[in-house]
Length: 309
Image 1: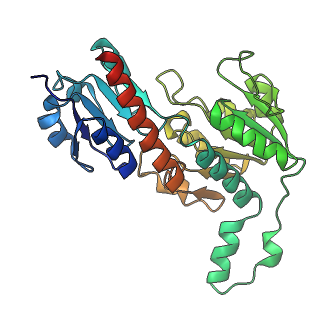
Image 2: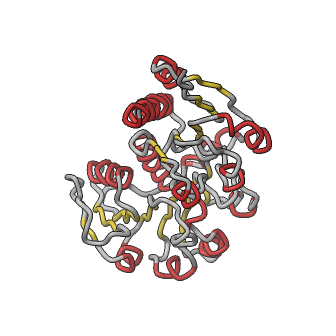
C-alpha cells in the first residue's frame, strides 16, 4: 500500500490552506510554535514542511529530514531556509511572493506619509495633553522624488501608488536595464544617481548572502541632506550602525523601519530616536495577505505533488 504524503506545518497559516491540503488526501500535522529542537526530533517523519518567517530551516534540521521533498514558505522571503543545502538534497522550495505585494506597498506609503506629516509625534503629543500644531508642520508628497531600490512586484506597486500621488519615481534594480516597468511610469537610473537625487528612498530587495549591508555608510553619505529612508524588505540589507549615524548627524531627516537586523530588535538606541518610526515586521500582516499566502501555497504544493506522482 502506498504511503500517504505527510505534511508538517510549524507556523500559523489560515484554515483555507489546511483544508486544501487535507482535501487532496495529504496527512497534515499542525504544530505552530514548535521549537527548533522539537522540529529536529520529528521532521524525519514528513515529506512536506510548511513554514513562515519564524521557523528556521537550517542544515541541522535538514540533516534530520531524509523524507523531505518540499519546503513551503507562506510568504516571500526565503532567508530563513538553507537554500543551498535544500538544493543539494533535491528538496523543492515553494513560496508565495505574490501574496504580500499590496500589503507591503501600502504599509510603505503609509510610513512615508507618517514620516513627512509627523503623525506618530502628533498623536503622542495629543495623548500627553499637548497642542503641538505649530511643531507639526510637514511636507506634501506631491512633487517629491521617490527612489525605489528593487523593482519587483512590491517596488512596482509602490511606484504606481506614488505616481498617482504626484511623485516623480526613480528606480534601480539589481538587474539594471533588464526590468520591465509594467506601466509604473518610472525611470530607471544607476544606484548612485538614485541616492543623490531622491527625497525619499525605499528598499524592496530580497536578502541574500551577496547583499547583506547593501546600504551602508557610503550609500548614506551619497543621499541628499535631509532625505527620508524606509526599509520594509529585510533588516540585514541595511547597516544599522551606519543608519543610526546618518540619523544622529542629521544626514537623514527621518527613517521608517518595519524590519531589523535582529528581530525583535536589540538596538533600542536606534528605534528610540525621535525621528525614527518603527513597526514590528507587519508588512505582510493583513488578513487578506495571510489568507492568500496560505491558499496559494497549498495549491502550489498539491500541484507539485501531483506532478511527481
